[in-house]
Image 1 (spheres, one colour):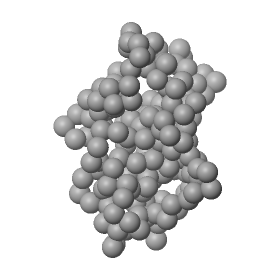
Image 2: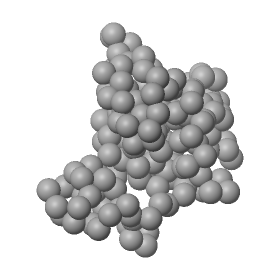
Image 3: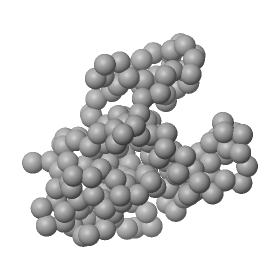
Length: 167
């Protein structure tokens, strides 16, 4: 039986046997004795996306009272769910993210904690994932954007909307 530790573009955490390309966390949100999620879905505003292996280290999933390992199909899924690249294991990606975030928000020399506070306010609406209106017509969205129609998520790639699935 797969663990409930895969994140969808809407931020929901599901159980699926499919694998992901990234791991991340939202703090400690599991019980290591049962390897099940607690009622809460985050314990920190710092929602990260990390590489699966870093400097030869790999983590056993949900075995300690430490951050809960959550998995993402790809980076577009992680970003849509409200996670950002980790400044420890993905420094170059995190610096590019920060530069883009600063440009989009008209800011300079922003620290990760400041970004996390803003992202946390923007990602949630009364404890649920906040959906934002499209900033421009669908045909003008960049590759990697994720859009929602009803219960379905779509990844924008080469001007097409591709249905997202855990696989």
